Amino acid sequence: FEIDGRKNKNYAQNLCLLAKLFLDHKTLYYDTDPFLFYVMTEYDQYGLHMVGYFSKEKESSEDYNVCLYFNSTLSPEKGLRSAADRVQLPAESGGGKLGSPEKPLSDLGLLSYRSYWSNAVLESLIQYMENATESPPNLTILELCDRLCMKKDDVISTLQH
Image (cartoon, rainbow, N blue to C red):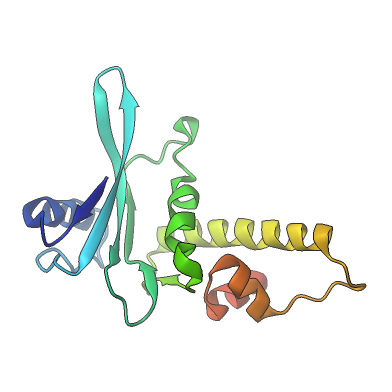
């Protein structure tokens, strides 16, 4: 569900306060107007249940595509451990614009992003190698950034780790 922080101020503030219970560095909870919130849910026989959310600035001068990612259910058997993988791709691939999450990342945020970025870079490199026409294949960092809609610093950091 997409929630506009300006139109649904109380709901957006409550989402931020919920995340603040688990994230020490979370400071935003009153000025939600410039943000969109994307609430992830799980459906079972009792209905929909929130399992997490992420927010992003409507207009980011720093090209941040995600400001906060909060997952309340870190249950691998439910397949939610990699929820960040599924929600980041649409956010990053919007219009071919390079983006990055707001920094600094929390410890768990860094782990999640490194996992996502590593998988995305590896998949892109494999796909490139399979379709390469020149020998030896030649792919620059900037071309990789364009393919993944990732910032150069994020790609380099991923390749270094």
